[in-house]
Image (cartoon, rainbow, N blue to C red; front, side, top):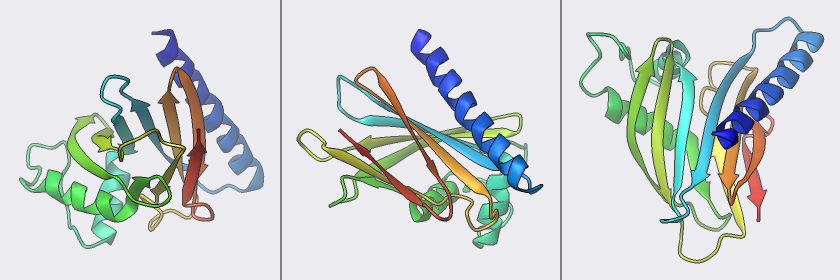
Length: 173
């Protein structure tokens, strides 16, 4: 529970700092997604949750030719999950710098205006020395889009902020 509280505090601190810097520089709106990665100590796999605003994800997917999905509504299209997976696979990759890891999109959950996407990553065999992540989700619709990544591994939390000028980041171990 305390780890979750610390993760929430870290997220809020980063978001607050970004908001302050954006507001002080310009009056443009602020757009953010949050990714949380946690290594499962038993399997070594990384469990990921991505959080977006539903309307932002719909807008990004529409811009990429996926059409209206009506996410979280009674008339959500039947292929919404597979279309979201197709979009994510063009915008997100994770690997060790030499090879991209295979990942499975496990599903989604819509809560009010938020959409959570759940992913599991199976890294290559052996101990990782680095984890390289590319996340360009929603960059095509918002100039000021920021994608925050929190990695929880071996009881420690590290964070990255990605934007159009820095679409990928590295965690070194």
